[in-house]
Length: 198
Image: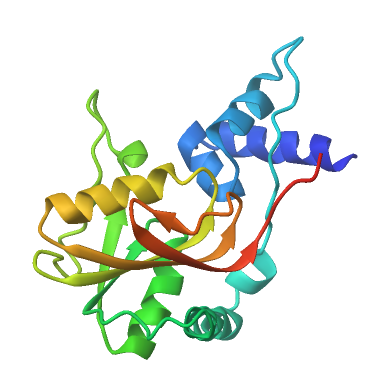
């Protein structure tokens, strides 16, 4: 089975288990366009250009995940940043939460969890911060996620934080598929910038 056939199989298996396209995109770290193609394989339409990142061998092991959190902090500091003066680390659900938890522990900061709009129910899709974790109003926030696929979710969370009285100070991710240096004026620090050569 080719890697593309394997990916199609994984996407369809997730779909058959009840996952929606946005959940599949999160699970596979792929764009919605790619997931739609994997599920439909629309005839005459080219395979979208995307990059699969499977880091489950690291993300499934707490010790290695903790090492990634340390590396993220070291990478940001190596960029010449003094380190953001933050009070809350915001983890983006779902995959950013474990990493954000470990970063918050190292930074002696509180933890907030952001649920992207794509995960909300109803006609009007809105993002939200979980009430079970730290509030963000009046706080300087560090946003943490695993992968930047399109940058849309990060733009959304930056806008949400600002509209709710918080200051987004920095964004830390492990993998950046877009090569972003900033999102809406907020600096981005990544361990790996991934790009496709055509």
